[in-house]
Length: 241
Ligand SMILES: [Zn+2]
Image (cartoon, rainbow, N blue to C red; front, top):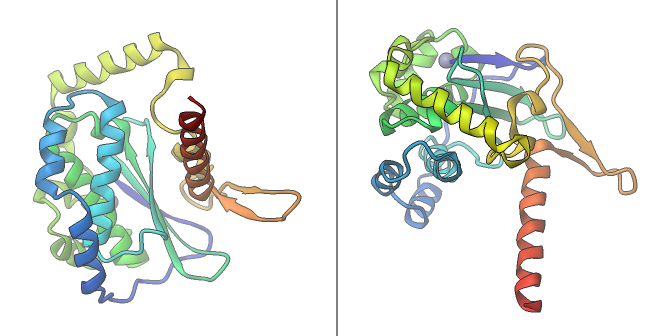
């Protein structure tokens, strides 16, 4: 659970008041209890857990009153940390942004409170801004505001790792993934941490440029475009069929 900042330091985020928008989002989404029930039914299956994790993050980003267009979520596969947040200023408009990456192992976790704790910890970094990178006062205030579980309020979570049976399941899932081959990974390659940022501190953020139009898209925008195109292709093949 580290927080890194890009070369240009982000400013602390101003308090937000979007109660009306939050109510609308909450109405449209499944509740935390619904997601928890689905989590319990989907043990150690990343193909089910990745969409569930995204659903949880959307709910928590709205709950933290953060802009879902500016705070995005990807994944990583390190065991040395659980979550990491990169805070930076958008080059196009100077607005604050944050890229949150969650370990695939926390997505495999049997305990729903662990993924909730990890997501809220990272969003507390987003709310606190650079002032919260050291897990000090600003970060603790953000933890209070977001109701981060006690076990997830520090820089490290030893208890997350001290579970031999869970770690055995991590190894089993890794072995199954290796047997299936790389081409069948269920997590999107575009949103893999090292494919978005080449280093946590003073790193470069990957962007994609269309040579003809000159349009520049970041990895998350590129991912959204790919998903939308796949959905369009699936719809048109439905019509043909
Ligand atoms: Zn942290």
